[in-house]
Length: 549
Image 1 (cartoon, rainbow, N blue to C red):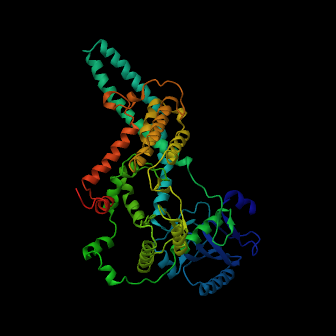
Image 2 (cartoon, one colour):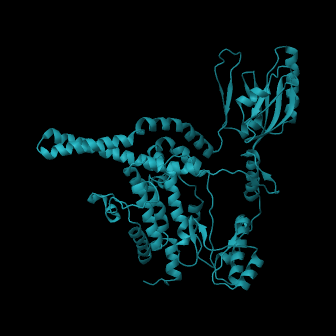
Image 3 (cartoon, one colour):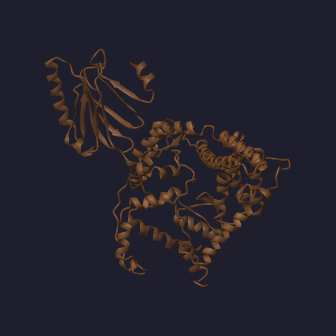
């Protein structure tokens, strides 16, 4: 029995009733990473266990039966099941060779979406039964997408495996036709053939660029998968096995998010000191998120955005929305969370205490509490003695600048070259992980515009990049184009000024980093000048510009 269970189901735990019958007539198997199973009773005809889901914490009882054919033995089985019934305080189900799946009322209430599927018996004298419980909406979507992956890989292999070679052959064929057309410009067959080949090449180039873009981003996702090797739980124990690591995570977040706390009403004088929401505003905030709103967010997202951990791009969800839309909307409605928060105040004790008081009032009114393990305070231009007093009063850990927020470094002054090293290092790492040695010139151009420049554009849209860093970024892109690496010491085939000219003029259309940074920052200035309807612009206008023109 041990050899069979180890070889067939390595990740499962197993128990049998072999102590009560020589053949071990009943087996119960489960994945310990997903379920905590406590066997409560054995018999020659059944196994009864208490089961708890480690993910949802739902608890139920399960009895697996393989009854004898003798009437007396079956009567004895029934009496024992009646006794078990008196002990089960909660959902209970029993199944086995009875071609039935029997449940009590609590099970029907708890798992009302469950269905039992009985398959053909074949050569056996009973039918296999599979119980399907519809779990969390997100899990349902992930499961369906996972099942779809092999099909999508087959389509990808069939349609795009030779897309680069096909594009190069089409370019050569079009070039050959155009050469002959130059010698015989009035030939109607050549004219028609050129039009046909041009259209075909445009489709191939579009498909190739899309394929390389997705392939590069998916490969980057794979190269950066994280895995937790060990973790320290709340009692100080180091866990190395997968079950211990999972339990440590669950216990931590259950304590963090699962506690119940009574709330207090916010004092009315405090509410009335500022403009209040009308009932119409409250109704909007309390209204459920609609399918239309979720769809609108998806369809406003560019199709070339990086895929998620599942490898599916936004373009996939757009194109297949009629099929997947309902499931995606249901999953998103089930999952909303808050992000990290930055709060600013003057560097004095009075302002700090007002901030702490505001946090406390918010906590009492909402039931939400601060995560003390993630709280840090950053100072700029504050005396050391005052820093010590503030830390002693608040208990906050002193952080050092620059610190990372939303992927970029934040500090009091301008960024310098050293603080931007993380950007250039990330670009170099992308090149090393993209399998660049196998890419053609066209493939490298696509990756420069869609992957490397995307990294830079995100930073450039937040603050001006130092000129030395801009030159380094352009050098990285230039070296990658000509030599498939981040280092290239020979004279380029074409000057960078020419390479970065628009495609409309017959050049490669690579974005010039310095010009792009100026353009994005100028757009931010234009928003401020035009008083765009954005929170940070309204704040700047009121605090710094004093609502002036």
